[in-house]
Each structure stands twice: as structure tokens, then as C-alpha cells.
Amino acid sequence: MAPGGAIALEGGRSMKKYDVMVTKIGELVEEFIGQNIIILFNENAPLELQDISVLHTGGELLDDIKAGDRLSIGERVYTITAVGEVVNKNVRRMGHTCLKFDGKTSPELPGDIHLKGDQQPVVNLGERIIIEG
Image (cartoon, rainbow, N blue to C red):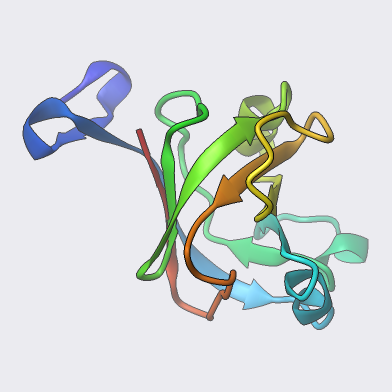
């Protein structure tokens, strides 16, 4: 067991920081995915934001998310390239962040996580979203 109760994997080189399951996909999510954006909230998201959001089971963030960490959605893996200054607080409080699949190395907004990867973003009901560092 790594610090903070996180699970060390692969001989201590990788640590699972966050692990949740997709429970609902809002009606307008496809439009945002078309712009390489996914908005995440736990199941307690405000009603007015649920149509644009991917809702998940929520979970404990065991260690801060940092550039260089990996985020997976199902079998698709992305590298985190930038993390806004309020991301860790928002993820801990309400499972909320805005994933932007543009590879930027400086966050546009304080709640953004920027990612790069070989695959277009896709999210399906029941898939796990995992962050490892």
C-alpha cells in the first residue's frame, strides 16, 4: 500500500489515484466529445449540468493529479499534459473536471485537465475511468 492508501502497481512505479464507473451520459455529451471535451461529475451533479456531463460513481482521489499521469476510459489510455489549479479540489469535492483532449501543456481554465493520446475520446456507460501516476 502506497502513501494515502493508494495502491502501488508494477513494482511501485505506478499508483492508482482515482477509479470510478460511468453511470449516466448526458444528452448533449456527444456534442462536447465532437469538440474533444468531456465534462465529468459524480452522480450528485446539479440537474442543470447533467445534460452536458458524464456522471460517475464518485470515488476518493488518493493523490493529486499531475501532468504525466495516465487517464484511461475503458481500454483507451491518455497522458495528462496539464492540470488546472482547482482540479484536485473539484475532483475531491464533486468528482468534477473538464477533460480536454488537445495536448496543451498549460491549462486554459483552472478546472481543466488536458490530455494527449492516439485515440479520439469516447465514453460508454459502465466503463471505468482510472487515473494512475
